[in-house]
Image (tube, rainbow, N blue to C red; front, side, top):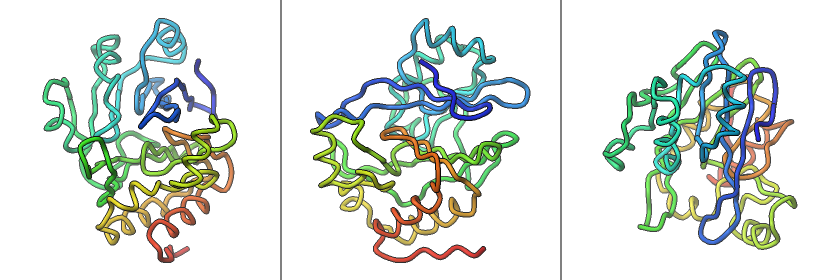
Length: 240
């Protein structure tokens, strides 16, 4: 189930449907220098998954990175009760029943040595109840030059079912690293989004992992910039 991406970073994937489309979902696992494991956007826990994780180290941090990706966090916490459950701002209010230990605060924080985080401000999507703030925290693993997103960009391709390909050709996110038309309609605070994007582009990343779509192994920084230039309808200049 676990797939090694680079030294000390793995992913695990499972089927997932959203608005009737098969989009899959993915969690990312990072091993710190002390062999503690950080789990970002947990998927459904299983004995096989737990066994594989335990071979890598000890799960000490479980992260729900936005207001949507919390469905399996509680079951993960039940398997690892001594792990710290971190959540994006606003999740405690949305789901007060979740036993959240820490809220991810601030911008460009170094949560642990080698992992940085930025709060993606201003980004909204269309959910079942209307326009929703996503409140996503995105992460950067410096050692592997990997950007870790959840729902702030998608990257679907021919490996997905035909209906998903057709829908994302129309809505966006097919063979482009970008948000969809739903986010374009819902997001009005473009200046805040651009500021967040520029902070992310300050990171030196090559690879991009997202929760929905195929991992981008090369030229991820340029693809991310291009995708958000299309999304914002304006160029994004980053010094250096």
